[in-house]
Image 1 (cartoon, rainbow, N blue to C red):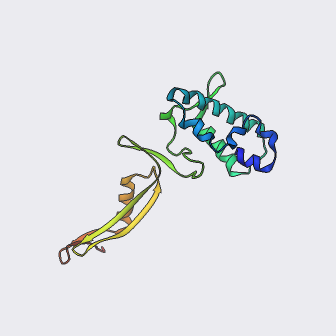
Image 2 (tube, rainbow, N blue to C red):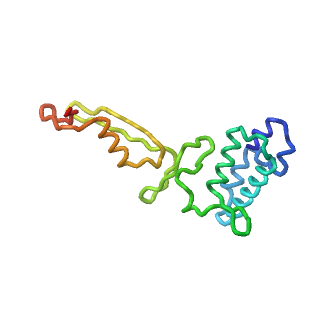
Length: 174
């Protein structure tokens, strides 16, 4: 959003936000920080974004970048009883929350003990004596479960029956 405002030439809105224009800022913000410094830096970023939004007022509200900035504040911060805006506890953040501003539909999912961001795919392969062929595929947001994919695939392909003649599953119409 800072870059969008900068491109308009309305620099008065960018007070204390100029460092976001530096291409290496991302590295200084997260990558080069020790874990205990990240919490402090995250709070500084939240405070800065909140101030920036207030400074912009109604200007730029029609831009998608503004909407994404509002969305991340809404989904990943909360206001304490003292009126301070703070990050939401990691466990309370919705899987549908904004994961990446360049892809606002990507989701988050914890499966087994691993974290996944983005999308999930389902591929159906038919195998017989001659080899294998991908017969169906689908993708969805990362929160779409494996069991949902299975159910949808069965509904889409219909019931299958083992074909002894060529040792493969085949579509059986009922």
